[in-house]
Length: 128
Image (cartoon, rainbow, N blue to C red; front, side, top):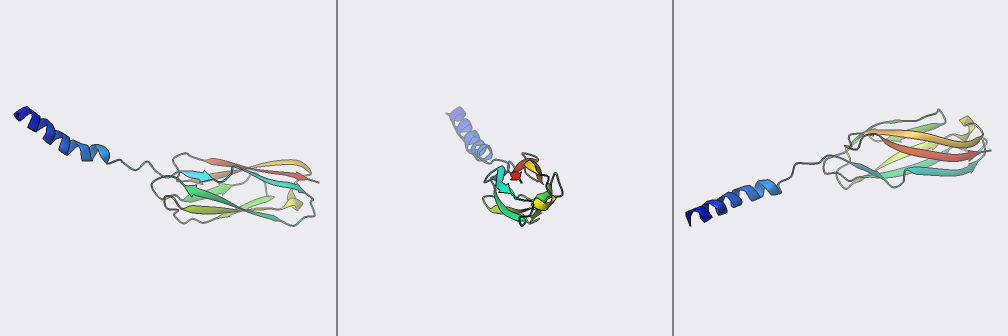
C-alpha cells in the first residue's frame, strides 16, 4: 500500500511538469509564396501588392528585413511584433519601367525571428 501511495504521489507531481511545454518559437505562414502580376507593359504604373502572413508559432514574430533581387521591386514592412495567431502584411511595389522585357521571376528573401528561417517569395510577370 505504501508503494502505491508513493507512485501516485510521484504521478501527481510529475504530470503538471510533463504537460507544461516550452514555447516552440515564432513561425511565419504566407497566404501565398508566388505573386503573379500577369502581363505588363514597361509603360504601366507601379503595381502594389499586399501580401498577408500569419504568425503560426507560439511567441511573437518580427520581420526584420526583406531583400529583393532587383531595383524594380521594393518592399515595406512593419517591424512591430506580430503576436501568435495575428496577421501582418508586406507591401510589395513593382516598377515595370525598371524591369527587363520578357518573363520575369524575382525572389524576395524574408528574414524574421521565425524558427523556420528565411522564407522566399517569388514575383512573376511578363513584361512587354
